[in-house]
Amino acid sequence: MTAVAEYGNFTIAANKCFVTQPTLSMQVQKLEEELGVKIFNRATKPIALTDIGEKILVQAKKITEEATRMQDIVSIEKGFIGGEFKLGIIPTVMPTLLPMFLNTFIKKHPKVDLKIEELNPQNITRMLEEGHLDAGIAATPLSMDHILELPLYHEPFVGYIPEGNALHAIEQIEIDDLSMTDLLVLEDGHCFRNHVLNLCQMNRIESNPFDLKSGSFETLINLADEGLGMTLLPFLNANSLTADKKKNLRFFPDPAPAREVSLIHYKSQLKLPIINALRSTISSIIRGAIKFENIKIITPERI
Image (cartoon, rainbow, N blue to C red; front, side, top):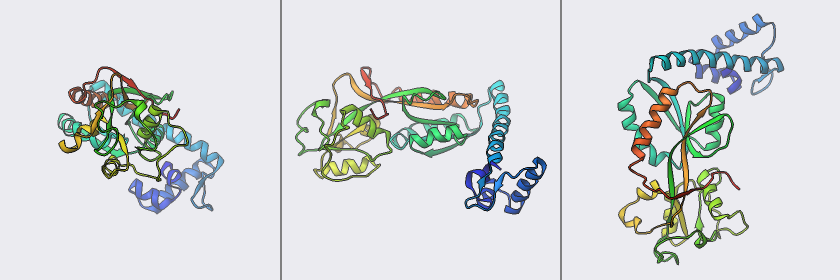
């Protein structure tokens, strides 16, 4: 039932549930007969819930969630670290952080069936709320009452300024040096874009002489190398550059602007043994990779 409501189509829902479409249709019809109401309006495309169907769906989700929680409670009691665990990671963190901890984690906890998906922050929080994710790794603070944030590390911003740029000659970059007409930033939807705009307080009209929509730091670096400006990178991205490109990096003086990256989950989440194991693994690895003490956290929300 919940799958039909989500996908609005019996065939797609049946495929997702690994049953045949006639079997699923018969099960839903039987439920409707037992309850004496119509849960779905089959005349619409996509199939829509009736008014009473909306209320039944809420209860059905609660039943499914509570059934899952029973197993989680048993796992917590036994100290068992295993089972399926769905994790969402934002695009500006996944390429650098995931290779650092994944191999260590799966070797240490082989009974955890880790399902990882790259998602933007909005989708991570939505899917946590809907129960499609167990946890996420995202920039914080998010200031959402129902989401618990467990900080993993603080990652400073680094300037990438190639030769030919007027700022290349300086040893340290200052916030006042930045100009939106020269600064290449990620497209809307990436929280690191908001970090940069908040850092520079650039919610103004001035902008680059061209309209750029890219979710790739590599693209921004390549454009900067072509003389089209400069960009800001998270420390781990900057640290992964080749030695030749690292010559173009410029750091901020203390307190260095930085973002907070956290493991986030729904407050009522019960897969805490896996969450704690994941946090412990990442924290122990990242501690030796980022060693900045004097920082200033920049919020990922637009101000």
